[in-house]
Image 1 (tube, rainbow, N blue to C red):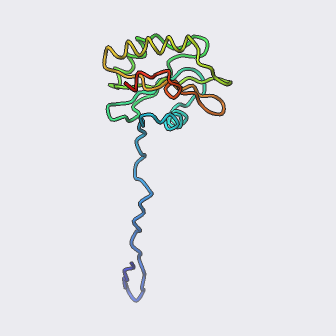
Image 2: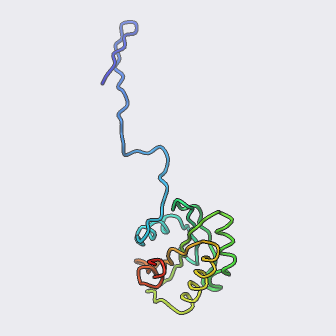
Length: 155
């Protein structure tokens, strides 16, 4: 729709702005989708700036990504469980995803499994949940949840 304006013999046409629905005024909130490890993988790739070490993704009560923080490197491993839970409590988050990076094809190992079990046990005591442990490989990812290694979530 056009409006016509006349000013001292000059006619100008001013168009009204179009209503474009696919543009957003603010960025969308990234949310955890239960059981969708691919979405979590994409979220981790976008939210984590460094492609090495161990990271923690924290989600608030609505499932929105609230904070990411590096929690260790390849040499020292993951931080103490107390430090992980303290970080989650500091940001008032109820759920978390561990993210680690590897340079080659990943195979689940007993060290990571034991860490996950200890973290699940400690988090349960304060009503917190480990949603997944993702290992990002050069050309994909490995999800502990998808591989049945966090099957407590189904109960």
